Image (tube, rainbow, N blue to C red; front, side):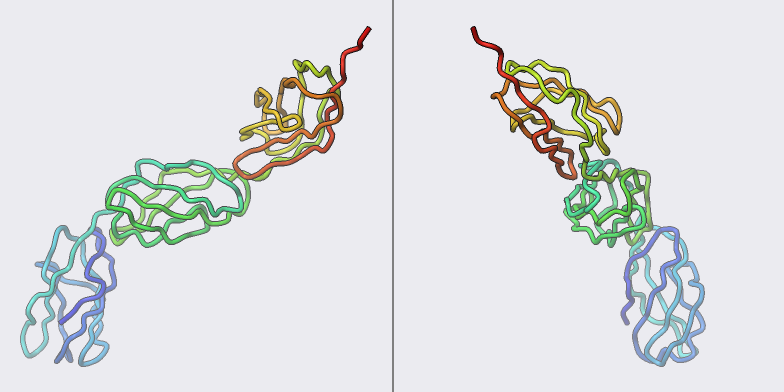
Length: 248
């Protein structure tokens, strides 16, 4: 006799299928000392039932008018516990791989990011990796892990959209650098870098629509201003002009 699945939540509620012979007229299915619910005699070789709550490993037996079967093992699995996300944010397009750490993760079958789910790779009982699915909109979503022991959540992941640059002001400054510049646009609160003509500039995030930056030294002429966040980059072409100092 076999049982599938052979593991389930300690809280019970797992629908199992028991396959064997001479199962007609099944009157009861027992998990250890506890009776199962919703016992259905599908055929002479198959019975379905819903597991009661329990812990550890128990023997499952089937009772018919002909007697009681030998037990087959069923393993109760505790609900997963997630302790941390290796990466708490990423692009709205998804595709980046994150690590989830916790306990009871060995039987994980899915990880949900908001309303979108993905199939994880089990590294160990304490770790999963999963490719983040595409999000619906920028912003935080709950992360939920489902295992044979149940579902747990409590972690948050933030989807980030690609930045856009609308204005750069002022639009010119000396080749020696040091000009304070205000950059406005969208999705700027997760900015990782700002460059002027390919040279990295120091910057500060004011809010999601405003950055403050200081121009690095440059060569006379118009240069591109590029803002980058984890989702990608946006280029304001020839948005700042370096002006050479006068010579006498």
